[in-house]
Length: 197
Image (cartoon, rainbow, N blue to C red; front, side, top):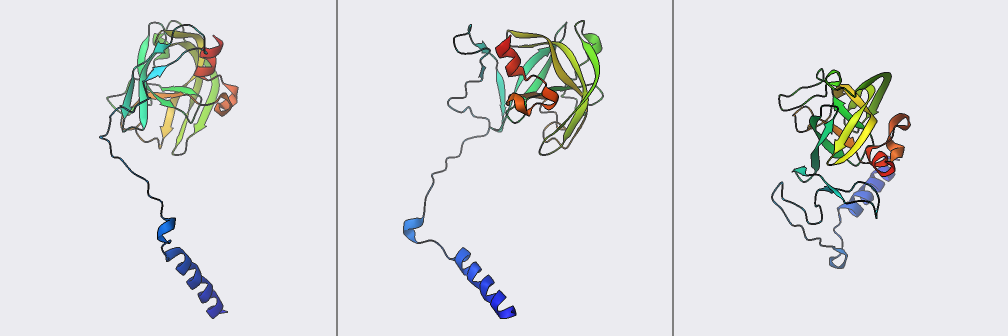
């Protein structure tokens, strides 16, 4: 039995370790760009509404490492400006409370400073591939460029663990761009709310 097992392992290793014939080699050209350079086609515009709607709203996005894009979003009355990471893998908008801030570079959201803020007792919890964010849901006005959502439901985070970049102060919170089905508790996504407004 030991010999048969060794033979099977040996044949498997030979199959894996044997290089393919020259005709089977596929070469893929790779180009290196300097970090932070703009990509063609990524104009950094956020289009509010649907095709045929009013003029597009422009929002300048900051490109970090050609991987992370963040932009300024205004929340509350008077407006508090936060730099949010635009995330295609989630659909929720969350911002940190001052309790959560871990970097001097970060801005926290202060609901008490907003005249349009409404608190709730509803908890939220979202799990990313690298960590967890939790806190309470609330309502306030948000503006992305010139597009405004009144009394929008989003999350005030008072706990975030294991999120790369957040603990380094590269962004203040997250604005999920993903499908509404990704949002916990049936919360509306920002994009869904912009389309229906």
